[in-house]
Image (cartoon, rainbow, N blue to C red; front, side, top):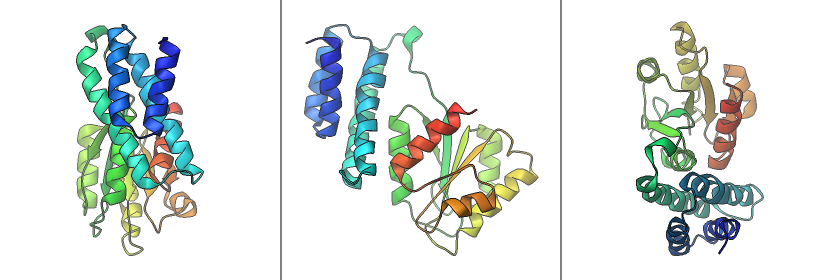
Length: 216
């Protein structure tokens, strides 16, 4: 099978959510000496992007998107042992993410973490019920490229604003892109509180991350 055909079949395997097929194709590709970075970028990540596009069109559902991301993440982990030091996977950037203080919801945040991580970004998950001071402390220490603030309650949305204001006050906002998410959150709210973007779901979050990283 040619390189192009193998990459196409890996794409299809992800769309079919067939982890065994994807793993078998990857083994075949490695046996043929196909570039590992190409396998990740043009095979695995491209397949996940197509699945995300189906999700956005309503042709796939959240559990399918999550399973696809998990297949990609698992496959990338297996491929890492075959990467030469000179061809090491390039970290595309770092996303720090957490659910704001007073809110213990984490399902949506966890899905975002899985999808973003599988696309080649380093993810620092601060968990749930994260105090504003901890966001500030961790941003200062880790210097992420992006910060994701999740809020699932109308009563905790205000803490997204408080985190942004605190980062501004501490001089940590410059160069840091902030993305807001959560059921009650909207684009107008994100604009009102000075965030850089709003993501309505995990794949939307990935697109916003890629757009914002491209503008840095």
